Every structure is written in structure tokens, then in C-alpha cells.
Image (tube, rainbow, N blue to C red; front, side, top):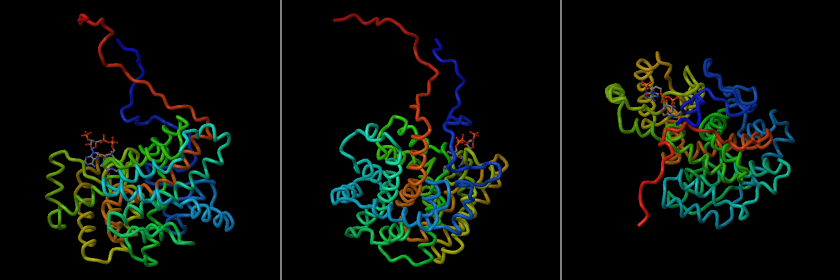
Length: 383
Ligand SMILES: CC(C)(COP(=O)(O)OP(=O)(O)OC[C@H]1O[C@@H](n2cnc3c(N)ncnc32)[C@H](O)[C@@H]1OP(=O)(O)O)[C@@H](O)C(=O)NCCC(=O)NCCS
């Protein structure tokens, strides 16, 4: 009995789920644009705060708008004592990515009535900007708790990248490290509507749920090793390999076992992910210690060996092959690579949430192809 005869596309490959004007992934040319601007130009010339304004407004901000959004981010990132304490407790119980998901969900509000409070959508933008600030702040709170450091929160006038880096590492960031963090935040801020975590944001938003739940759910989606979790997985692989000399044999063995190599492959890109080229430029500037140099050499060997084998099939490095080496050079603990990605991607998620709300917001309710039993009577007799 077939109740639904539509063709199925596993993983919704090729199925548009939204009309979107936020970012464009050109998978054939290997290009990524936010609102028409290439990520190469944005990461070289902008601050994260400017890109947040660009993503929300569709245009780069003038000085007045930049000051306004910077002020909103700074005011919005405040956390109550209870929210800080809850995050610090969660950090003791779970991987920071899971702790982050829980801490975001607990940001509130106490009433589940977002739908009734949102006759117009500027409120969604305000909540979105607040969430960008709070998720960055929470990431730092978790890192301080994991490292056993006391809470030391954002300082007045501190830029988002500087705040995150200081709270994550416990040290004052150098200008180079802050610039690099800023570029990483920009680079991972959005990647079109169809990636799993942004799609998750849109699905949750479509139920008219509170923004906090949409972002918390997106963090869960991003944690998986097929998505954002690959940045942690790739660096762990390089650490296991241990030396560039061993990389070729280890990766060939993994390929023979049909293992997935983290940091390789993408549903949309058929060439090298443009974000990995930007990450490699950053790596060239920021990697100075032998430990990260060795890890980066292993990454380059993995790129060559896997590229030779899988490149002809259209599988090339994605953003996560090299990003871990740069996070490590910034002294960010490995468990925090994916939370940093989440803090960055929160910008994209909340702008997609707003676009979803403004564009009709019909609830997502796809169908299924039934493969179970035909309706049948119960044979069991009642005792
Ligand atoms: C990104 C990813 C989830 C895309 O998945 P997808 O579009 O569904 O592609 P598939 O998993 O169906 O892969 C297609 C083929 O390429 C192979 N392949 C894909 N990525 C691979 C990888 N990283 N290493 C080895 N083989 C890979 C698959 O085994 C499959 O081979 P088959 O046709 O012989 O079965 C997938 O490439 C992957 O798991 N990569 C590693 C994790 C990662 O880096 N994620 C971050 C993405 S930004």
C-alpha cells in the first residue's frame, strides 16, 4: 500500500527549501558571497560587527549604523547571574557543544508566547542581535568553567572577537590573534539556507517557536561530525596521525576501510571550498609554533593524498580541514572549535530566522513514502 507516491530525494539533495537573499554558495566556481560581497573581501576588510549589519540589512553599514549595531550587540550580550551559573554547571557535565545547546535553551523567556508577541518582525531582529551577543558570551563562560577559571565577563567597548578570544583563552589577545578571530567569525557566519543547521533554524522558526529554541536546535544540528563537528574531528585525526611522515599511510588505510575523512567533501562544492583558501591565508599568518606547524603539515599531506584519490570524484577540502589548525594556533581548546563555529553561525541563523518569518513562514511539513505494514486487524484476543 503506497500512501504517497512522490519521488524522494535522500538528504533533500537538490530540493530548494527557501527563497533567500542572504548568502550565495556557487558550488561549481567555488565562491561564497554574503549579500553579493565575496568572503575574501569581507574577511580582509571588515569587522564581524559590520558583517552582522550587512547580513541583517543587505548593505554594508555607514558609521552611524555600525555604531548602532555595535551598541546593540554589546547591550544584548548581557547574561544574568543565574544564566552564567547554569552554563558553568553544564560545562562540568557535557561536551561544550552540548552544554552550549542547553545554556542557550535556558536563556528564556519564561513565557512560550513568541507568536503572540510578534505582530511585526523588528522584534525578531532585536532578539537575533541579542542572541549573537549572548552565544559568543556563553561560549566564553563555558571555556572559563572548563579551565577552572573564575567568570570574567565582557568589558565595556570590547569587540565581539576580542571578548570571545579573551574569555576562551584566559589571555589578552594580540592584534594579530584578534584579527584572525574576527576573520574566522566572518568566514563561518553564513552558508545559505540549505545547510543542516540553518535548515533546522528555519524548521523550528516555521512552528512559530521562540528564537531561543531555533538557535538551540541549530547548535545540536551543527554538533554532528558530518557538519560543524568536523573541525574538531579533523584536528583529532591529525593529532592521532602524529607526524607528516605517517599521514599518507594512515589516510590510505582509512580510505581502504571506506572511512570518511573529516574536512573533505561537500554537498554543494565540486571544487575546493573557498573558505579553506581563506583559512589557509590565515594559517600562513598565525601559525608560528612547531606544534601547529606539524599539524598543518599533516593537513597538507591529507589534502594531497585524499585529493589525488577523491578529487576526480569531486571531493575536495571543505572549511573544516584547516580551520582546526588555526583555532589551535589561537590557543582555543579543541572542544571549543565547534562552539566557536556556532557562535559565528548564530549570525546567519538569526538572519535566516528573520527572513523565514518575513517570507510567509508556512510550517515545514514534508511527507513520507510509506514502507510499513498494510493496515491489519489485531489478532490478539483480550484476556
Ligand atoms: C559533507 C558530507 C556530509 C556530504 O555528504 P553527502 O553530500 O551526503 O555525500 P555522501 O556522504 O553521499 O558522499 C558521496 C560519496 O563520496 C564519499 N565521500 C564523501 N565524503 C567523503 C569523505 N570525507 N571521505 C571519504 N569519502 C567521502 C562517500 O563515501 C560516497 O561514496 P560512495 O558513492 O562510494 O558511497 C560528506 O562529504 C562528509 O561526511 N564529509 C566528512 C565530514 C565533513 O567534513 N563535514 C563538514 C562539511 S562542511
